[in-house]
Length: 404
Image (tube, rainbow, N blue to C red; front, side, top):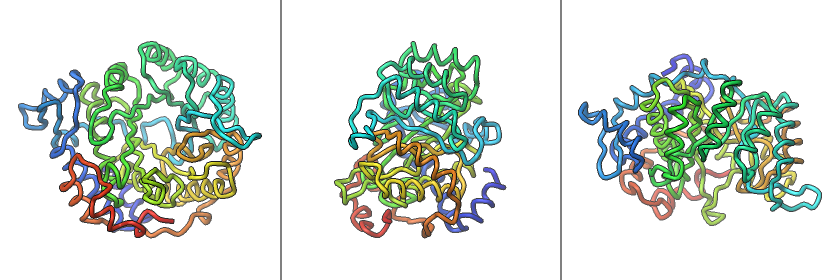
């Protein structure tokens, strides 16, 4: 625990909210020890199996249960925020939209091309408010995309690695520049390893490449419908990935990229990234991780607008201003994305960068800082590995939290 950061967070968020966040960490440890994480990948299972005789882990029927002692042991070997290559308060062009928005025609659905990837990288390189970049859009050729990014942007980058070819290319890039991360969404709800990516996660960690461990449980679907409930589930999933990395390669650089998300019952339980609550939720995730001295990468500044409207730009300003007011480490999605992160708009990218150059903390909306809600863990104990749409906490909180 970074005691200096704890005091700083108290001054920003308040003592009661800090106590909530510290309890979220304890709740996540309970989840890992009592619900565990489903995993069939043998090297991951073997890494935890070594600690079963000490009583620090249990591997049973393709499920891994981790004690708090082992989690805390693993956290001690993760390089801290001061050792990481990205400074605090860094906005990234991040995310992976499947389509490009046609700003002239006013509609989305354009398939991404290499020239789009090059344009994003050049904009990232040229603008001081952009600290680094992920893909932004997804090309079919993973290696081609990372080559374009590396050739056009010297700032920190993050890639996906889903093949041996892209792993080999990433190793080559890493030899020449150390400011890269590999993104993995290692888990999926409910507390299961995504076996499509697990083998390459193991390979990347063993190769000594920095990993960016993402997870996005949704409050009201795969997590309790309250702040501390969805934070705890998100934190548990990412802690599993961080522990796995540390057991496979102690001292491996890991980024906590937990990305708590809200299912909005008003839009058929789809995620609503334009809510003030979404931005605040991710700022809270950031502060828990900073207190734990973990490099941290969340989501803020996006919108629920389908087109780059005035509201879309107001949402960008609102999210960015909240980040500036309360402080953060790294944020993805603050510039270019539209509804559901499906379309990437270059016009929105350029304008949201200009907004970021001009905002200050006075532009942030007033928010009521949440405190601990005991019903969150009551839901976890009641629902376990199930879904939370019909949970009594979900229905009780409709219209009362996660609203603008």
